[in-house]
Image (cartoon, rainbow, N blue to C red; front, side, top):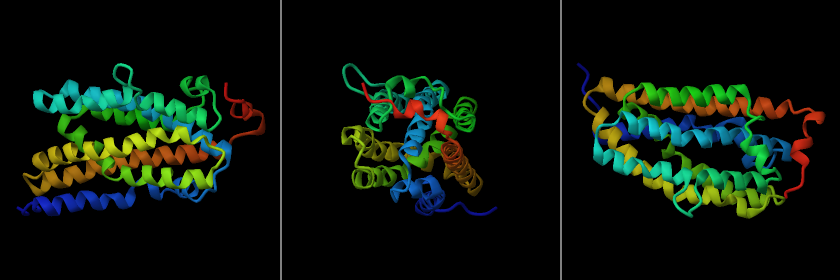
Amino acid sequence: MTKPWTREEFEEKLRQKGKGYHIYHPFHVMMYEGKLSKEQLQSWVLNRFYYQISIPLKDAAILSNCPDKDIRKEWIVRILDHDGEGDAVGGIEAWINLGQAVGLKREDVTSLKHVSPGVKFAVDAYINFAKQRSWQESICSSLTELFAPHIHQQRISSWPKMYPWIDESGLSYFKKRLTEARRDVEHGLGVTLDYFSRTRETQEQALEILQFKLNVLWVIADSIMLASSEIKVEDRDYLRQPIN
């Protein structure tokens, strides 16, 4: 039997998966370089909203499968991060604000009528994974957050220069996630290292699970790139409406 990697080696293997993160997808490279049109950036915001509203559903599925009270107490904060708590605005509302900052109406974002079938399919596959697999496996699939702070900072740093027409108040989602993602990584990574470090087989399983989630994000980017490249002139009226 092949010996398992040490905890440090295993963590490094997980982090190396970041080479396949969607920050390297051509669409995201174009975004960072300021090469997206207004319509393409709006299409990205519209499509990604479906992912944003599905994150709390994923986390609720993890909670429903988890018998460990301490894990549940720490994980539930993720739902509040996105749904909001009391008067505090959550990530979902912050994303709607982002939509308005790029020139969309609230109903354009929330109606979901502009979400591509490919995005829906990929996101739904991720939610079904969280519902059907063990809570440990689902937590492992969330570890793409290891690589998220970089992409959030990239948008905060580049958008004001590359897309000066965007209201900078709409960037609050990315600023908020910088702190939340780093906190979430510490917990999710700890659970994954504890549970999957038992054998080389379970460690390799964890890498496969993380690759699945990376594939989901890549397919989402593929679908958005295809959808935004096929925007027809007659279909762009909703993207040109002034902000109320």
